[in-house]
Each structure stands twice: as structure tokens, then as C-alpha cells.
Image (cartoon, rainbow, N blue to C red; front, side, top):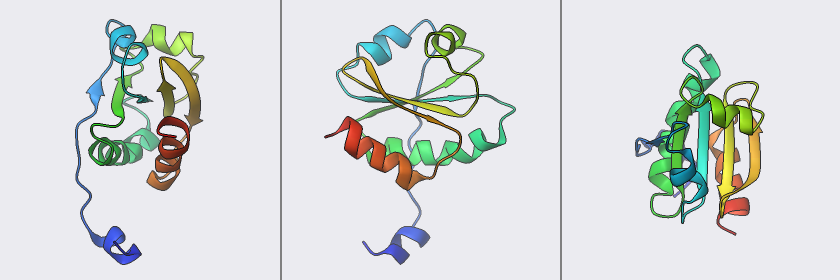
Amino acid sequence: MGILDRLFKSTPKKQPEHITDANFHSEVLQSEQPVLLDLWSATCPPCKQLEPIVMGLAAEFDGQVKVAEANVAEAQAVCARFGVQSTPTVLYFKGGELVERVVGFRGSLYHREVIEQDLLA
């Protein structure tokens, strides 16, 4: 697929799994697959920009990486545990361990590289 095809072709989307303080341990730390966890807030414009990227990554890496999202208001203990102070923050887990943290908006290519280098390598 060429660069123009990538730019103008509609990217498939998949809804990320919803994470809260209640299911974080079982869905993220005990996941058999590596996990990308997008922590967002409703009043955050960069979070809204990141949403379609996360949905595209969920479709692209379906079956290889669990892509999940959490509203920081519903995951306050998770945010405290990992020192999340701003949104968006994307946490990457492999084998239940935090392996990478990305704070602020980054494009899909950046997140794809992190997935390929840190989660699937």
C-alpha cells in the first residue's frame, strides 16, 4: 500500500475496551496480550484528536494487542498508581508491566512504532 493510499483510504475502526478501576487488574495487568491503555478526559481537545487514532490501532492490531481506554474520572486509582497528571496519557503494558508512557498527543505512526518496537518485539 502506497503513501497516497494510506492518506486517502478510510482506516477501519474498532471500539477500544473500556477500563475502570474495578477491571484494570484483570483486563490490563493479567492480560495475555500486550495492552495499549489510553487515559483521557472529556474536556481535553487533544484526547478527542487521539480517539480515532486509538480506534484505528485497535482495528489494525486486533488479536495482537489489546487496545483499551479509560476515562480518568472512572480510573482515579489507576491514574494515581502510575502518576498520570495530564491527558491524554497512553500507557503500554507487556506481561503486566508498564514498558512505555506517552504524554500528550502523538500521531498514529508514533504509536504504531511503539507497539511494534516495545509490545510486539
